[in-house]
Structures are given as structure tokens and as C-alpha cells.
Length: 95
Image 1 (cartoon, rainbow, N blue to C red):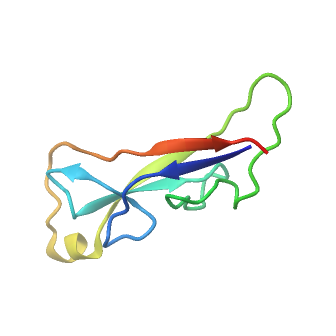
Image 2: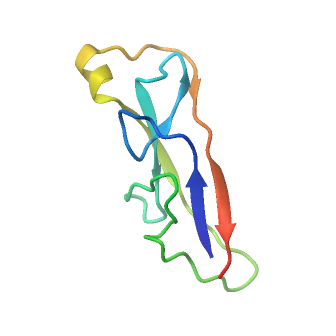
Image 3: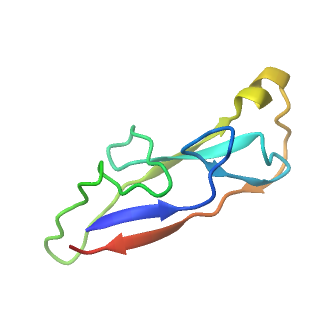
């Protein structure tokens, strides 16, 4: 089974989800793969396209996420307090 996140990428941060709200164009959301450290880019399958073998009745997939400022936002110190969000959908593929 593989899981693929899909969403709009931030142009200034390839591989990161675009945010909307007060920091649109200044921040991106990085998704972490199940190893806890590898960037999982939108459109790529988890575990380096290897997926997971499903055995038993359940499977835990411990993904993570963190916020990243764009290079321009860092240079100009233009990130402001306020609400922002990003949207991702996921697709499960059974092999």
C-alpha cells in the first residue's frame, strides 16, 4: 500500500505545500515521511515509493509536518502573526 499526498506547492519552496491567509507566499508546509526526517513532496508516494506491507487489521503511518519561511520572507523578515492554512488530500493505492 502506498500513500500519496496531493496539494498545491509553494512556488518559492518546491516540495512544500502553499499556504493561504496572512502569510501566503511567505510560508510553506513541509510534510515529513514515515521515517521522521525525509521531505515527502506533494505527488510522491511515501517511503521512497516503496509503500508499506499491510498485515493484520491496522497500519500506523506516522507522518509529520513543519512550517518553513520562503527565502524572500527570511530576507525581508516579512512573516507576520496571524492565521494561515494549507490543504492536502491523500490517495491510498493498494498493490
